[in-house]
Image (cartoon, rainbow, N blue to C red; front, side, top):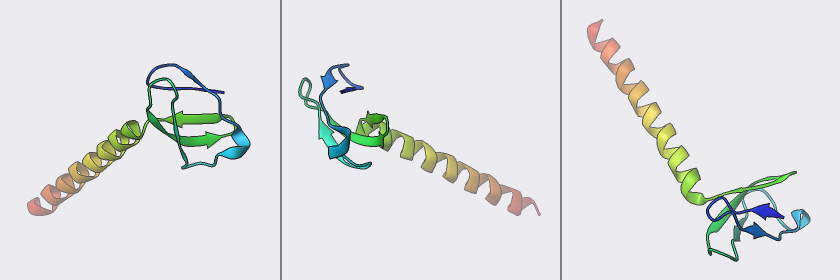
Length: 74
């Protein structure tokens, strides 16, 4: 059993039937969830993954810009 991060509904999933990276659906709200851990079973919404990736990308771009500014001063 795992809890849906969107609606808090219980999803009956056998840990042996899924691997990290697999996608499962919540029966209650229909959300597509990505398996991020199997022992214990953990899921998160793909939107959360995309938001984390965007934040990482933005931080990287800001760092690159700062390094470029420092080189301009030299």
